[in-house]
Amino acid sequence: MVGNQLGDRLDVIGVMHLDTDGEVATKVDHRLQDIERTRPEQFLNIEIPIPTIENQIQGERVFAQMDAVKNLQTETAAELDAAAALDPGKSI
Image 1 (cartoon, rainbow, N blue to C red):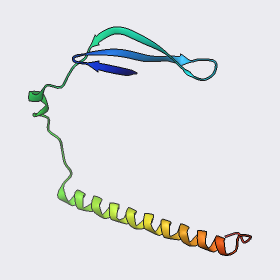
Image 2 (image 1 turned 120 degrees about the vertical axis):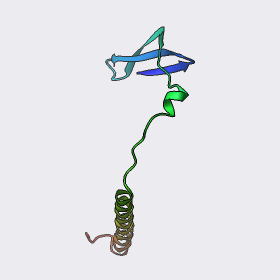
Image 3 (image 1 turned 135 degrees about the vertical axis):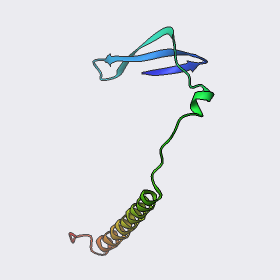
């Protein structure tokens, strides 16, 4: 469902079905609906848990390993492309 927010109200557009061509047929509901807004005093009291420092360090290690694997994959793809360019008839 998609909407256009106007202050504290929302104009609702709902996807009802697909037509025979597979296109989305929409129906616009011009009735404005009340929506709940976040109040700053409530928002400031939300507690957001964060991982322990040990878990953050472990996560950094995992991301570093992922970067290394991505770099290796890029290098390998470049090497394979170069090898294929030298001998286009040979399957690698």
